[in-house]
Length: 178
Length: 124
Image (cartoon, rainbow over all chains, first blue to last red; front, side):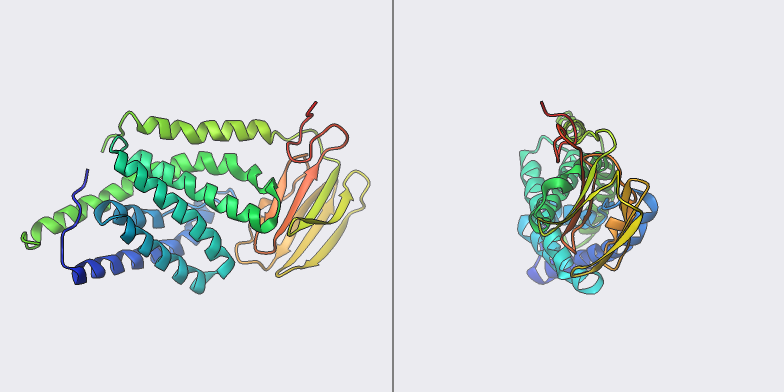
């Protein structure tokens, strides 16, 4: 699908830092955007997943997990509580692992991978929330979250494709011996 | 970028899950009792059909103000970070739920008699 990056460690670190910054920025923007775009409480666009999915495709699983953890930590320290960090980490780890496995299958395009990622992120967060509140009644949110996952997942896939295409272009112009 | 054939399995999966959940959590007729739970423990049950209009203040990790009016219940105000409990608005049918995860608070409406608390519809 997309070529994996081959570059010196320092350069990769710089790229990952840029992606982490992007993910943090998207998470921040999204708290305002989501409320305006989607009227259902608890539903997010998942803009940060553009960055995570790009890193997953362009760099690999380990890098994607690192960027995701860094992003979650910074976002929860800056804008919300540590409890929400726990939900977020549960959701994003589950989502990254599933996206990675689907990516490895090679029969799915970014659309399917992104939708599954959105879905697993929701399921992970619901599970964590059910454990914390000690009540499974929170799962009555599931249908709305699942339907939104399909729509947001497709939008996120399109945006991720734009990022990855731009990245390929940049790397082509960089020194080819990397 | 075109979707591959296999993608449609992944598009269909959430829709199927959603439909199954809709069926499970199908709201029943107007619910009888509102159950307020904190950390899984029931702290208060309110008979919505007979309850007077009132507000309840809960000081959990965060402050949540609950209002009961016209056989319905909602969270009017909360100082938790996401405030999704407030955004949920009024609930009145069996099976509906308001959750405030930061406060570990859930408010669920249960039916009476043969109605299952979670499923909100006749089980037998």
